Image (tube, rainbow, N blue to C red):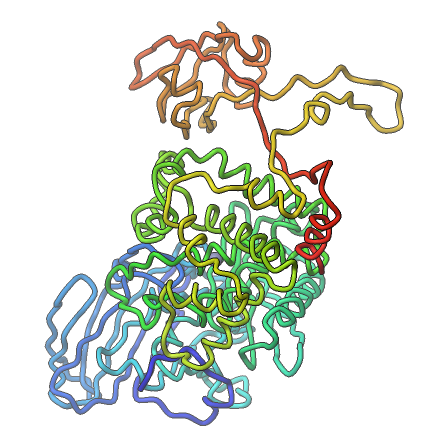
Length: 613
Ligand SMILES: [Zn+2]
């Protein structure tokens, strides 16, 4: 049996399974799920393992730490012996009998990659919850949901129902053709709102998980537009049914992709604020793009998985970098961003952000990918100084590659053609991922541009990317913002009050957090004025020029009083001891993408091709 993550609902109807999980929610108020595994068995020994990480999130999470009260009996109730082999594996002396395994699972962290269960709902991340039987991952697995259906009325999952319809008093049983599909299929049970729409012959379900009421029909409309755009990009939809789960709550962000599902999270402002809504669309376009790029087209190291240890790959530039380039571009092509908004967002959220990452000179994108397990996912406050994110720099490298191909072919080809060629190659051999060399060869063949070596040199070095060398060919440049943009007089609407020109922004290379009335240093940029002044992460900033500062705003205002190039006197505190430092702010030199004044008609024509929609 080959590795596969493909399943249609029709394939599971009427199936039986020799590995069955029963989920009981009688202790949901304590964030507990009671799990019983029934395993039909003839082997003398059985080994069960809980994954230590989940595909798509490259961090060892040791999810077995949330499981306990492990017991095993045969199907007559007689206890069987077992022995732990490692932190996440246990061997059972089954003696050829069918067995019943019981364990408790504690789930109390809300997010897209963590299970969360309470009296109101259950969100189940399968890798954290379901142990698998070593050697039997390729069998059909069933999951039975034993919740009170008058209290929790709705269940949503990309797992397939094993019956066409479940009567109210009948157990809901869902199925997966193998463990990899089960592991890839989160479940939400509760009273979330739902909507559906079809594109082509594929059904799309939307599950909106939130404490308040939001407009799910508006959301479904956005998602439909994203599906239509990405279907046009790839040429087809690779599933019969797809589930969008959206978690809305304060402090929520991020997403996790699955083969027939994604779980994304946003703050409530996404439903009321224009710019936050655009960010949500970009996130949803990103997670949905993964349906093709990473879940199916993937680095050779990512599927089949070793669930117990790190699965290293240098190619997250493909999985996440290229996806990060296309998420915003496809949101623009969908019509959610104007051309000006797209260029502004590309500048502000990509290029300018990378400008503030000194770590881009310390590590390559490929190494950043390989070390994701301890770098990007460790979230050290010093991380921006040590490495570039393969999302961020990988996304910009993809942008430049697209522009390079457009320029070299005079607009006849672009990166889209390379991605579609990858998709065609994937379909010929879906059980295996791609090596980096194979990906680049396919790009070259699809575009007839010898771009592989150049692209690899961008991914493999810690040099600055050649923005202007590439962008100039499309009549664009990435240069410091023009001063007139910043110092323009601001008029308020409907009055004739006018304010003096805003003071130009200052840069000190510090980010701060406010905690219990204290202003603490969260991040310090290598080589920036704050670092030169001797200020460190976790220090408290107490006074600026003799004035008490307790908020980021008051810190900035105090610096504005002295201005750029003039030292400001800081009283800080480190380890409870006071110190003095002088910090000399610089003018913030922000860059932006602009059309070159002297761009030729040929260059402008290529620009139109790049931004065509
Ligand atoms: Zn992603």
